[in-house]
Image (cartoon, rainbow, N blue to C red; front, side):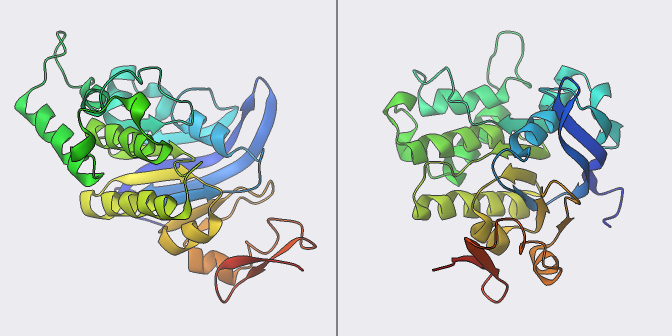
Length: 259
């Protein structure tokens, strides 16, 4: 287990769901600074619900979530906005903004009541434009962008918010293979180079195995967590899907279709 002082996020025996109906139970894991973590599992297993719970968008059923050595519920909304940024699958309502304007919204937790951008704010916005290859698109309206371009803008806005923890729900949905890899490589670089802790849900299990430092498998039972090699050795990927349709190949870290 990681050093408790370096843990950005600690989740202990968490049960999540709606009203009193549990979607997933007994989720426990810890993430330290500079780590990229994928959350995988079949549809409906609770990946998005977990992300919304960790982001404070819905209450947990039971268990404990500790963010920066403080219980999640004890953070004020102002404090939370400086420690945690979230990119959900919903399209932004502000697609009439330019790329630069949408990324600048990430600086709202830090601006004065007039919303004026300081030189530091502008520096963070420029860093995000550069990191996600958006300089040439900075004055383009967001509704004019492709899905891949808009996804990069949304992640860049989260980067501009400059929080230690970034949560992303399906950041590679609707993208082709090249752009899936591009987004995940950018997230990996952001985690490792800027010491951000990034947790994202994904269906791209093969890519998560190759690029993530840690993976949380929501399997409806034990919800194993660890580095990809450990999880492969312990055969946790073998039973994610019905074996008559696909089988996991431990040598390549990929799923093969049964013909």
